[in-house]
Length: 413
Image 1 (spheres, rainbow, N blue to C red):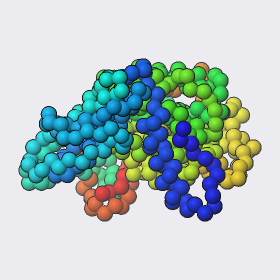
Image 2: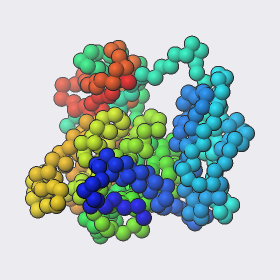
Image 3: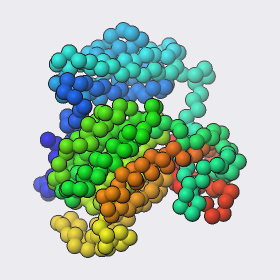
Image 4: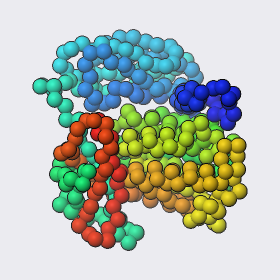
């Protein structure tokens, strides 16, 4: 089992430690996956993504989960097999040439029992003239009034400010736009008993409510990766990871939240993380500062179902008063929690504090409903410079008392 340990020789540089930890986490997603039934095999093309513009040399990267063992992974382009691998990582380089045409890319995984699965994507040619409209910014916007979501607003009701400059709304839709979600479930010792049972029930409620074009990935963690699934729209595959795991070990929220953000980098459209945890990190190698920086680049909606005790439901000091370790005192733990709160709120998501286990299921269901109730706004920034600078974004609606949540900005590149 890949494990994040909380002690290393003093001579190991921090940068090296981080690389080792991230490598372990990513490899763990391949090596420790839980599956629906023995003999099943799953394959997902991680890159290129469906609809990507592709020409010349490209890398085809696939994630394969096969409990019976991988026999081979075959790579095909436009119906012709171009290569095969038998060992991970399943990364194959192919030259598509310079022709302006779309390509069908297929990856077939075969396990030791002869079972197989296929995933495919279609890449797009470079448009005539070579100009790509890659700077469309999409905002996923929740509008609330007196605690209830406003659902009857039209495009004229919204104003987008990019660096305080009004922008023209080009695309407008409601929340039936498909999403890709990572369910990030804490299974550390603090989740023992009814808390973990409630987590499985709540997460399954979310999974069962997903629609046909939605996709999800379950990740169960403590101080190490316990179980995961591929990105899939199959609810039974996702549910397979959401039960049977025992609560044990410490908590590495930072490491696994960073991993979830990284895994969503190659996904298209609306991307979501739902974290269920008390948020008190005891074992991560990465700091919350590094995770916060990654989140600002990712533009992923992050929802945090925060398990708290009754005494400290609105008070971090009460929750962290007795926490000490070789690395943190109570004030440091409070600082970590505040940064996690900042990450969630700046993403456009929200924090749901729950005390009783009976609250968990309804909160999962409400997050799913919020995604259905969101507005999706698209615009081309009038002041784009592609210089790597940060752009503050604000969305206003024509209602003085309404509360608007969306991602607070993006990196201009």
